[in-house]
Length: 536
Ligand code: NI
Image (tube, rainbow, N blue to C red; front, side, top):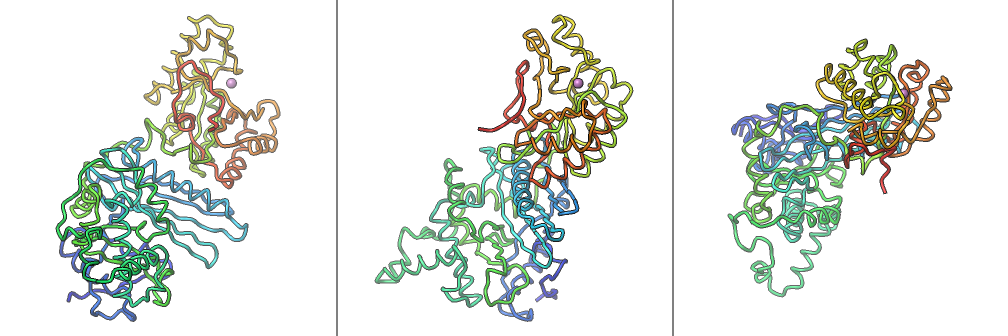
């Protein structure tokens, strides 16, 4: 028996359980042996050693080539933060992880009681990464005063279909899912002496169904050999083939909501490792996650084709080729605004002397904005444009020097658009993806000529007229709804000063601040006019 430390964490050192980057087989074995001790009172090295109990997982920042995106907002009333893997521009898994975390953040902020300064921290690690499948484990820890709660779930990207699927996709069918729960129940009953009646949630339900079925059969032997028992085919089952049913996987995940299998991983021995929150284990006095091992030969009979690929990827370690070198920007939104409360803050007529202060505020909230700039000002403030691009903001074309396009010829409009686009492109390397006509002035010629999507607004703060910080903030906060495009002018100091309050209040109300392109994720057509991205 190798000398291993007593496993278990306490207090703030707790970091999502036994998630160890596996670097060598030797390490796998020694750590795996340690993990078998989890439930032994006093942590004696004892008979519960189960080498297949270690979950394979890799902290994203320790995976070669992988990069992490981070979103943190600290305010007087709360601290929220999440980290997500950057798997290239618009990668479905990056987007899904971010969106799930953003949804949870909104729910957390809506639930603030007004006491103290609660925190929500979300993190991600990789369970598997190959060209065929990428598995991510999402963890959330929320603290409010002395109370702390944790949740964990997994998401699986299937490269064949391009879909991001829940844990159920690892299993071949409903029967396999049911069987997996019975296996977990067996571990709890046999290794941890939990009586059937104490088995938690869906695990207990599955165990009691199995018990009833066994009781309904007169001869236990025939139940054992029953062909409708998953695993009747015997050990060493081959990977199933055939079309994968994504719809079934999603429905099954809903039906089995609350299952410990939501936090499933592969074990270093090729089986399954399932973490169980200690609060679901009455009477065990656990402080650390409980690991429920499922042996490789049992797991094999349950896994889908995706499950086999995922297991292979987990066991062989992350493939660096999976991680593209691109950053988070680019085609495709990074948040799914159909499921979130998104708003696009837009700033016209700049850049100007207050634009930097505005970007400082936006950075505090990790907020993205869109700047409709004048081409004639670009030369004066090139650093502002560089910073906008570097910090993930979007540039838009607001003409060369704010002429009313509706009074111009097609030729002149075309020349103005091209000149302004070129000025932006010279600084940041790409053309603005959309334009906004000065004064919102439009006619048929403008629409036919600009050659870009035309973005207006649905919330007009009238900041240029009032020049009143409180009024501007109140208007923006009162009128913004999900899908809104809000109009400000960053050339006015009074407007820039209103933004901290706007961001603070809308953040608290669960809004996410995205660029125009992200807000209109279903796409923008040149010459079409948009005021908001309201859904339904
Ligand atoms: Ni303007």
